[in-house]
Image 1 (tube, rainbow, N blue to C red):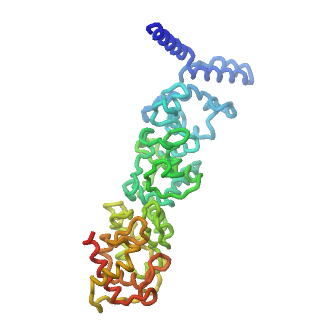
Image 2 (tube, rainbow, N blue to C red; image 1 turned 90 degrees about the vertical axis):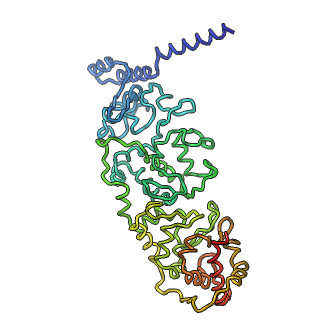
Image 3 (cartoon, rainbow, N blue to C red; image 1 turned 180 degrees about the vertical axis):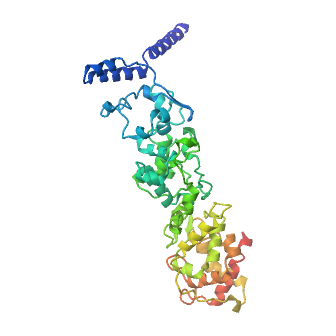
Length: 465
């Protein structure tokens, strides 16, 4: 047994010694030196190539608190003669290094990876046995690093069109309707601040295919959220290229700030949002759930009906005050976030812009008044009518929810803020384009007194929960 242990130890020592004598970086530098000598155009160039000192290349970046040794292998990164060489010796693409010199920026600030390493496996940090939090970033996502120092408007016109397109898509797909960012946004999903800086251990990799890195996780999560996180309620409908764009943008959401001397960002995210109109704000915060807002839909993920907030029948029967209250306060026990400043963080100005956009096509004619004061209320009769006419869609206790078409009627905003007149008009006239049919004389034929009784009963539902 001791003989076997001794042989294993000897083999380990020999392997360690071999690695020390023939490190990977030295191999690449020797091959690079041979290339320079072979391709030299004259004796002077050849002589210079022969004098190349094979040694560890190291860039110390005091402002960034980094040490990068990437050029120990990628030694030709600044050599124009290496424009068509193999990747490890190849000159850096484009003219990025002209404005981002290596002695000031290094490599890992843009590409991630382990800067101090001197072999491919550890430097790239990919794979189960490398234990590196931030593995090398795939080139298709590398523009995410540009946003650390540059604004998206600038990047859109200056070689950052991918990350700028990702940021635009993030806004237009309504991601902030569920996720808080910079203190503003919904609360259904996790806050996204710092998500681009999260180490690999933060992400559940059980269902991630191929290379298990944060980049693969984001991409596959956008492609099919429930395939990566089975319990996810994330709603998204995108194409393959769009998931790459969103991944690129998501990787910009970093918690570690670049030192001031590197940054060229003059406008804060909050000031950019302040300049948005109602349509842009609606897309950012509302469209993911309400889509166009024209039709109510039963959502299989949320297991409830999403109301048609821009339906003409709805708009002509509701006033701005009540609609604004719904936006501000949300609807408890549903996925509708409270958007007021001390909840999801929207200012009164932004809510007003969204409100103006939602109501822009409100019909000129108003609904015919109901005038409930003309009638006496009979709650017992209303309860019987509710059981026959209403509970199929709204639930036995008005709770709405799974496999139920109607919205919750026990929501505090409905109970405390909805004008009984509004409720009566809704029951009488229905909502064209939604499952809510008209129950009045032009619909299923209920008498106005019956409608008054139903409304009276509905107003008691919150106490019957």
